[in-house]
Length: 347
Picture 1 (cartoon, rainbow, N blue to C red):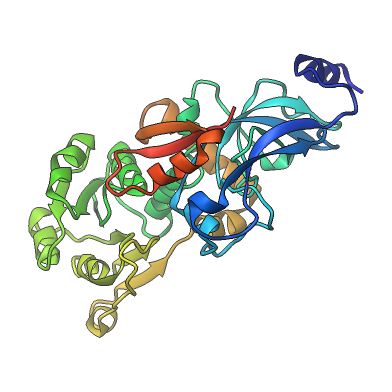
Picture 2: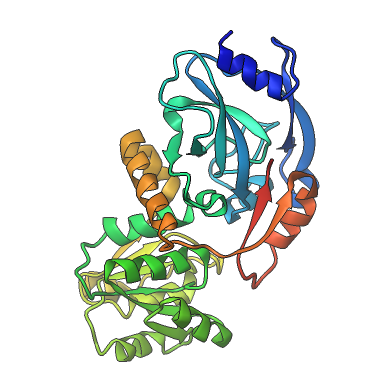
Protein backbone atom coordinates (compact mmCIF):
# COMPACT_ATOMS: atom_id res chain seq x y z
CA UNK A 1 0.00 0.00 0.00
CA UNK A 2 1.46 3.38 -1.03
CA UNK A 3 2.16 6.23 1.37
CA UNK A 4 -0.39 8.33 -0.55
CA UNK A 5 -3.04 5.67 0.03
CA UNK A 6 -2.18 5.39 3.71
CA UNK A 7 -2.32 9.15 4.20
CA UNK A 8 -5.65 9.42 2.40
CA UNK A 9 -7.39 6.71 4.39
CA UNK A 10 -5.89 7.98 7.66
CA UNK A 11 -7.44 11.39 7.08
CA UNK A 12 -10.84 9.78 6.63
CA UNK A 13 -10.48 7.46 9.61
CA UNK A 14 -10.62 4.27 7.53
CA UNK A 15 -8.89 1.07 8.53
CA UNK A 16 -6.61 -0.12 5.67
CA UNK A 17 -8.43 -2.73 3.56
CA UNK A 18 -11.89 -1.53 4.60
CA UNK A 19 -14.49 -0.18 2.23
CA UNK A 20 -15.34 3.49 2.63
CA UNK A 21 -18.99 4.30 3.28
CA UNK A 22 -20.29 7.14 1.12
CA UNK A 23 -23.68 8.67 0.52
CA UNK A 24 -25.17 8.56 -2.96
CA UNK A 25 -28.47 9.10 -4.70
CA UNK A 26 -29.78 5.71 -5.82
CA UNK A 27 -32.65 4.91 -8.14
CA UNK A 28 -34.10 1.39 -8.20
CA UNK A 29 -36.95 2.08 -10.60
CA UNK A 30 -38.09 4.77 -13.02
CA UNK A 31 -40.97 7.10 -12.25
CA UNK A 32 -41.77 10.47 -10.75
CA UNK A 33 -38.33 12.00 -9.95
CA UNK A 34 -38.94 12.95 -6.32
CA UNK A 35 -40.36 9.49 -5.62
CA UNK A 36 -37.61 7.36 -7.16
CA UNK A 37 -34.46 9.31 -6.20
CA UNK A 38 -33.39 8.27 -2.68
CA UNK A 39 -30.26 8.93 -0.67
CA UNK A 40 -28.48 5.81 0.53
CA UNK A 41 -25.14 4.68 1.93
CA UNK A 42 -22.99 2.47 -0.27
CA UNK A 43 -19.55 0.87 -0.13
CA UNK A 44 -16.70 2.39 -2.09
CA UNK A 45 -13.56 0.27 -2.55
CA UNK A 46 -10.05 1.61 -2.94
CA UNK A 47 -9.20 2.74 -6.48
CA UNK A 48 -8.00 -0.15 -8.60
CA UNK A 49 -5.04 -0.12 -10.95
CA UNK A 50 -5.41 2.81 -13.34
CA UNK A 51 -8.23 4.39 -11.33
CA UNK A 52 -8.54 7.67 -9.47
CA UNK A 53 -10.65 8.39 -6.38
CA UNK A 54 -12.56 11.64 -6.86
CA UNK A 55 -14.38 13.55 -4.15
CA UNK A 56 -17.39 15.04 -5.97
CA UNK A 57 -18.04 18.72 -5.28
CA UNK A 58 -20.94 19.84 -7.49
CA UNK A 59 -23.28 18.29 -10.03
CA UNK A 60 -26.15 20.09 -11.80
CA UNK A 61 -29.68 18.78 -12.24
CA UNK A 62 -30.18 18.88 -16.01
CA UNK A 63 -33.33 18.10 -18.02
CA UNK A 64 -31.52 14.93 -19.14
CA UNK A 65 -31.23 13.88 -15.49
CA UNK A 66 -34.97 14.34 -15.00
CA UNK A 67 -35.58 12.22 -18.11
CA UNK A 68 -33.24 9.52 -16.75
CA UNK A 69 -35.24 9.35 -13.53
CA UNK A 70 -38.47 9.13 -15.50
CA UNK A 71 -37.07 6.41 -17.77
CA UNK A 72 -37.43 8.60 -20.86
CA UNK A 73 -33.78 9.22 -21.73
CA UNK A 74 -32.26 7.23 -24.62
CA UNK A 75 -29.45 6.00 -22.35
CA UNK A 76 -30.57 4.49 -19.06
CA UNK A 77 -28.26 3.59 -16.17
CA UNK A 78 -28.31 0.01 -14.99
CA UNK A 79 -30.60 -0.28 -11.97
CA UNK A 80 -30.00 0.22 -9.18
CA UNK A 81 -27.84 3.12 -10.22
CA UNK A 82 -26.70 6.65 -9.46
CA UNK A 83 -27.82 9.53 -11.74
CA UNK A 84 -25.87 12.65 -12.62
CA UNK A 85 -24.58 13.15 -16.17
CA UNK A 86 -21.90 15.71 -15.30
CA UNK A 87 -20.02 17.20 -12.39
CA UNK A 88 -16.71 18.32 -10.95
CA UNK A 89 -14.54 16.86 -8.24
CA UNK A 90 -11.14 16.88 -6.62
CA UNK A 91 -8.66 14.02 -6.86
CA UNK A 92 -8.28 12.40 -3.47
CA UNK A 93 -6.26 9.30 -4.23
CA UNK A 94 -4.65 7.54 -7.19
CA UNK A 95 -4.49 3.82 -7.80
CA UNK A 96 -1.38 2.00 -8.93
CA UNK A 97 -0.08 2.99 -12.33
CA UNK A 98 -1.60 6.49 -12.34
CA UNK A 99 0.95 9.26 -12.88
CA UNK A 100 -1.15 11.86 -14.70
CA UNK A 101 -2.96 13.11 -11.59
CA UNK A 102 -2.02 14.10 -8.06
CA UNK A 103 -4.05 14.70 -4.95
CA UNK A 104 -5.88 18.02 -5.16
CA UNK A 105 -6.26 18.15 -8.95
CA UNK A 106 -9.65 19.51 -10.09
CA UNK A 107 -11.24 17.20 -12.64
CA UNK A 108 -14.38 17.01 -14.77
CA UNK A 109 -16.21 13.74 -14.25
CA UNK A 110 -16.89 11.24 -17.06
CA UNK A 111 -20.27 11.38 -18.75
CA UNK A 112 -21.54 8.14 -17.20
CA UNK A 113 -19.86 8.43 -13.81
CA UNK A 114 -23.11 8.93 -11.90
CA UNK A 115 -22.16 12.21 -10.24
CA UNK A 116 -24.84 12.45 -7.55
CA UNK A 117 -22.59 10.93 -4.89
CA UNK A 118 -20.00 12.01 -2.38
CA UNK A 119 -17.12 10.21 -4.08
CA UNK A 120 -16.30 7.56 -6.64
CA UNK A 121 -13.56 5.84 -8.61
CA UNK A 122 -12.98 6.54 -12.30
CA UNK A 123 -10.55 5.37 -14.94
CA UNK A 124 -7.81 7.99 -15.12
CA UNK A 125 -8.13 8.18 -18.91
CA UNK A 126 -11.75 9.32 -18.57
CA UNK A 127 -10.98 12.35 -16.40
CA UNK A 128 -10.14 15.85 -17.64
CA UNK A 129 -7.94 18.01 -15.44
CA UNK A 130 -8.72 21.72 -15.41
CA UNK A 131 -7.10 24.77 -13.89
CA UNK A 132 -7.82 25.35 -10.22
CA UNK A 133 -8.94 28.93 -11.01
CA UNK A 134 -12.21 27.84 -12.62
CA UNK A 135 -15.14 28.31 -10.19
CA UNK A 136 -16.24 24.80 -9.18
CA UNK A 137 -19.91 25.57 -9.75
CA UNK A 138 -19.17 26.62 -13.33
CA UNK A 139 -16.84 23.68 -13.93
CA UNK A 140 -19.60 21.29 -12.89
CA UNK A 141 -21.77 22.53 -15.77
CA UNK A 142 -19.27 22.59 -18.66
CA UNK A 143 -19.74 19.13 -20.15
CA UNK A 144 -23.34 19.47 -21.43
CA UNK A 145 -24.70 22.95 -22.10
CA UNK A 146 -21.58 25.03 -22.92
CA UNK A 147 -20.22 22.09 -24.94
CA UNK A 148 -23.49 21.82 -26.86
CA UNK A 149 -23.42 25.54 -27.64
CA UNK A 150 -19.81 25.68 -28.81
CA UNK A 151 -19.93 22.54 -30.96
CA UNK A 152 -23.14 23.66 -32.68
CA UNK A 153 -21.63 27.07 -33.40
CA UNK A 154 -18.58 25.49 -35.02
CA UNK A 155 -19.47 22.15 -36.57
CA UNK A 156 -22.39 22.90 -38.91
CA UNK A 157 -21.49 26.22 -40.56
CA UNK A 158 -18.12 27.97 -40.83
CA UNK A 159 -19.19 31.33 -39.49
CA UNK A 160 -17.39 34.50 -40.51
CA UNK A 161 -16.83 37.48 -38.19
CA UNK A 162 -19.98 39.55 -37.86
CA UNK A 163 -22.35 36.84 -39.14
CA UNK A 164 -25.77 36.40 -37.56
CA UNK A 165 -27.05 33.30 -35.76
CA UNK A 166 -30.74 32.86 -34.99
CA UNK A 167 -32.01 30.81 -32.05
CA UNK A 168 -35.19 30.11 -30.12
CA UNK A 169 -35.26 29.25 -26.40
CA UNK A 170 -32.57 31.91 -26.06
CA UNK A 171 -33.09 32.15 -22.30
CA UNK A 172 -32.25 28.47 -21.78
CA UNK A 173 -28.86 27.42 -20.41
CA UNK A 174 -27.64 26.53 -23.91
CA UNK A 175 -29.15 29.70 -25.35
CA UNK A 176 -27.34 31.90 -22.86
CA UNK A 177 -24.08 30.10 -23.64
CA UNK A 178 -24.67 30.72 -27.35
CA UNK A 179 -25.08 34.45 -26.67
CA UNK A 180 -21.88 34.67 -24.63
CA UNK A 181 -19.78 32.52 -26.95
CA UNK A 182 -21.00 34.30 -30.08
CA UNK A 183 -20.17 37.67 -28.58
CA UNK A 184 -16.70 36.42 -27.60
CA UNK A 185 -15.92 35.03 -31.06
CA UNK A 186 -17.33 38.00 -32.97
CA UNK A 187 -20.68 36.65 -34.19
CA UNK A 188 -24.06 38.31 -33.70
CA UNK A 189 -27.21 36.71 -32.34
CA UNK A 190 -30.90 37.23 -32.91
CA UNK A 191 -32.65 35.60 -30.00
CA UNK A 192 -36.26 34.46 -29.83
CA UNK A 193 -38.02 34.06 -26.48
CA UNK A 194 -41.59 33.41 -25.41
CA UNK A 195 -41.84 36.10 -22.70
CA UNK A 196 -41.44 39.84 -23.13
CA UNK A 197 -39.90 40.22 -19.65
CA UNK A 198 -36.79 38.37 -20.90
CA UNK A 199 -35.94 40.90 -23.62
CA UNK A 200 -33.97 43.39 -21.51
CA UNK A 201 -32.31 40.61 -19.52
CA UNK A 202 -30.88 38.89 -22.60
CA UNK A 203 -29.86 42.17 -24.18
CA UNK A 204 -27.89 42.94 -21.02
CA UNK A 205 -26.26 39.52 -21.30
CA UNK A 206 -25.02 40.33 -24.79
CA UNK A 207 -27.83 39.37 -27.17
CA UNK A 208 -27.69 41.69 -30.18
CA UNK A 209 -31.40 41.33 -30.96
CA UNK A 210 -34.07 39.80 -28.72
CA UNK A 211 -37.54 39.19 -30.14
CA UNK A 212 -40.72 37.67 -28.72
CA UNK A 213 -42.06 34.54 -30.43
CA UNK A 214 -45.04 35.05 -32.72
CA UNK A 215 -46.54 34.06 -36.05
CA UNK A 216 -44.56 36.74 -37.92
CA UNK A 217 -41.21 36.02 -36.30
CA UNK A 218 -39.53 35.04 -39.59
CA UNK A 219 -40.22 38.50 -41.05
CA UNK A 220 -39.28 40.18 -37.76
CA UNK A 221 -35.92 38.40 -37.71
CA UNK A 222 -35.18 39.50 -41.27
CA UNK A 223 -36.17 43.07 -40.42
CA UNK A 224 -34.13 43.15 -37.19
CA UNK A 225 -31.00 41.95 -38.97
CA UNK A 226 -31.43 44.20 -41.98
CA UNK A 227 -32.07 41.27 -44.27
CA UNK A 228 -28.74 39.64 -43.44
CA UNK A 229 -28.06 36.21 -44.91
CA UNK A 230 -28.44 34.01 -41.82
CA UNK A 231 -26.86 30.61 -42.40
CA UNK A 232 -27.31 29.01 -38.97
CA UNK A 233 -30.35 28.64 -36.71
CA UNK A 234 -30.51 26.69 -33.46
CA UNK A 235 -33.77 25.08 -32.35
CA UNK A 236 -34.64 23.76 -28.89
CA UNK A 237 -38.43 24.14 -29.11
CA UNK A 238 -39.77 22.27 -32.13
CA UNK A 239 -43.22 22.57 -33.68
CA UNK A 240 -44.17 25.89 -35.29
CA UNK A 241 -41.32 27.72 -33.59
CA UNK A 242 -38.74 25.67 -35.49
CA UNK A 243 -40.55 26.14 -38.82
CA UNK A 244 -40.69 29.91 -38.32
CA UNK A 245 -37.07 30.32 -37.34
CA UNK A 246 -36.01 28.18 -40.31
CA UNK A 247 -38.04 30.57 -42.48
CA UNK A 248 -35.57 33.33 -41.61
CA UNK A 249 -32.60 31.41 -43.03
CA UNK A 250 -30.86 32.24 -46.28
CA UNK A 251 -30.96 29.64 -49.07
CA UNK A 252 -28.65 26.77 -48.19
CA UNK A 253 -28.76 27.59 -44.48
CA UNK A 254 -28.96 25.01 -41.69
CA UNK A 255 -31.26 24.65 -38.71
CA UNK A 256 -29.91 22.45 -35.92
CA UNK A 257 -32.36 20.87 -33.49
CA UNK A 258 -31.00 19.95 -30.05
CA UNK A 259 -34.17 20.00 -27.94
CA UNK A 260 -37.96 19.71 -28.07
CA UNK A 261 -39.33 21.89 -25.28
CA UNK A 262 -42.74 22.26 -26.92
CA UNK A 263 -43.03 18.46 -27.20
CA UNK A 264 -44.32 18.94 -30.74
CA UNK A 265 -42.94 17.27 -33.88
CA UNK A 266 -40.95 19.21 -36.43
CA UNK A 267 -42.96 20.48 -39.39
CA UNK A 268 -40.69 20.82 -42.41
CA UNK A 269 -42.28 22.70 -45.34
CA UNK A 270 -41.56 21.18 -48.73
CA UNK A 271 -40.64 24.60 -50.09
CA UNK A 272 -37.86 25.04 -47.55
CA UNK A 273 -36.30 21.78 -48.69
CA UNK A 274 -36.90 22.05 -52.43
CA UNK A 275 -36.57 25.75 -53.23
CA UNK A 276 -34.53 27.06 -50.28
CA UNK A 277 -32.31 24.00 -49.77
CA UNK A 278 -32.58 24.44 -45.98
CA UNK A 279 -30.75 21.69 -44.14
CA UNK A 280 -32.52 20.24 -41.11
CA UNK A 281 -29.98 18.66 -38.76
CA UNK A 282 -30.04 17.15 -35.29
CA UNK A 283 -27.47 17.33 -32.50
CA UNK A 284 -26.93 15.37 -29.28
CA UNK A 285 -23.78 16.10 -27.27
CA UNK A 286 -23.64 12.53 -25.94
CA UNK A 287 -23.30 11.19 -29.47
CA UNK A 288 -20.67 13.82 -30.24
CA UNK A 289 -18.53 12.66 -27.32
CA UNK A 290 -18.84 9.06 -28.46
CA UNK A 291 -17.68 9.91 -31.99
CA UNK A 292 -15.09 12.56 -31.14
CA UNK A 293 -12.93 10.38 -28.90
CA UNK A 294 -10.97 11.20 -25.74
CA UNK A 295 -8.46 13.62 -27.27
CA UNK A 296 -11.02 15.86 -28.99
CA UNK A 297 -13.35 15.76 -25.97
CA UNK A 298 -10.53 16.74 -23.60
CA UNK A 299 -9.51 19.59 -25.91
CA UNK A 300 -13.09 20.92 -26.01
CA UNK A 301 -13.52 20.75 -22.24
CA UNK A 302 -10.13 22.34 -21.60
CA UNK A 303 -11.06 25.22 -23.91
CA UNK A 304 -14.41 25.64 -22.18
CA UNK A 305 -12.72 25.65 -18.77
CA UNK A 306 -10.42 28.46 -19.93
CA UNK A 307 -13.45 30.41 -21.17
CA UNK A 308 -15.14 29.90 -17.79
CA UNK A 309 -12.01 31.06 -15.98
CA UNK A 310 -12.07 34.25 -18.09
CA UNK A 311 -15.76 34.82 -17.36
CA UNK A 312 -16.89 34.27 -20.95
CA UNK A 313 -19.01 31.35 -19.77
CA UNK A 314 -20.97 32.13 -16.61
CA UNK A 315 -24.11 30.03 -16.22
CA UNK A 316 -26.47 31.48 -13.59
CA UNK A 317 -26.99 29.31 -10.50
CA UNK A 318 -30.26 29.73 -8.64
CA UNK A 319 -29.66 27.30 -5.78
CA UNK A 320 -27.44 24.51 -4.47
CA UNK A 321 -28.71 21.66 -2.29
CA UNK A 322 -27.01 18.96 -0.25
CA UNK A 323 -27.62 15.34 -1.25
CA UNK A 324 -30.00 14.76 1.65
CA UNK A 325 -32.31 17.42 0.18
CA UNK A 326 -32.62 15.64 -3.16
CA UNK A 327 -36.43 15.74 -3.29
CA UNK A 328 -36.44 19.49 -2.66
CA UNK A 329 -33.70 19.99 -5.25
CA UNK A 330 -35.57 18.01 -7.90
CA UNK A 331 -38.79 19.92 -7.27
CA UNK A 332 -36.90 23.20 -7.63
CA UNK A 333 -35.18 22.06 -10.84
CA UNK A 334 -38.56 21.34 -12.43
CA UNK A 335 -40.06 24.75 -11.69
CA UNK A 336 -40.95 26.83 -14.75
CA UNK A 337 -39.31 30.20 -15.24
CA UNK A 338 -36.27 29.58 -13.06
CA UNK A 339 -33.51 32.17 -12.99
CA UNK A 340 -30.64 29.70 -13.12
CA UNK A 341 -29.47 26.12 -12.69
CA UNK A 342 -30.03 23.98 -9.60
CA UNK A 343 -26.92 22.19 -8.33
CA UNK A 344 -26.26 19.39 -5.89
CA UNK A 345 -23.49 20.11 -3.40
CA UNK A 346 -22.18 16.58 -3.08
CA UNK A 347 -19.44 16.89 -0.44
